[in-house]
Length: 271
Image (cartoon, one colour):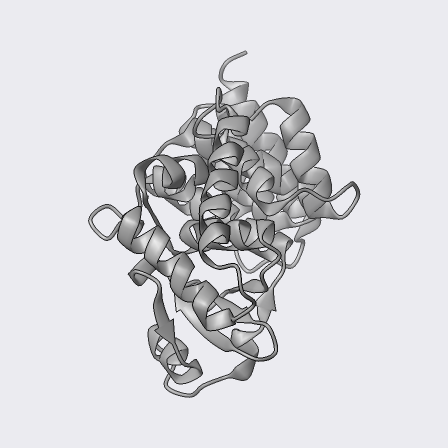
């Protein structure tokens, strides 16, 4: 991610700068995986999708609009959830969802939302535990939509089932804002890069998170473990020291102090 993009995204997430449209913010995040990404091509594709759908759904009927979007995206374009390789980092990148027509629930939902934003249609992100859907709600017609499963229309009870909740909690059906969506996308990438041992990419994600929340000790600890894997011992030492300073009562304080001593000992052996 180039520095201007990182700064703009960080400021938006931290609430210290201007807003970004969700599509542009998601594409900025995707530059971690695709450093040379040309955003204008992706934004132009979303514009084109919106124009096509808009030409088919000219009346104000919400059900007709949802039907038009679902037919175009899931029948004509073949948009679908990538169940075969769910944890491929490309599934978390909006540019690849546009190009390959596959993704995970949150990126497919972002595509659905951003097309609808262009058409001033009320479509909102719903961050279910372990899943992500969207809701169309214009005050007259309302439905939940699952882009990962071909645009399947869901009731509230079906949303709870999809989230594997035995007892429904209305709070999980509340719309989430852009920052919450982006944080969820960032955390998805963090988990994927850690699990695949792609430490350089994971480090970019951690740097972004620490820029946003510099006083969250847990992030320092996680970045320290990355630095240890990358043999960046001096940087690991600095993050371990900062973690212990920020989290003096942490349950793993003794273990982290022991790890820090080992790092200090190893650095001393170099002299």
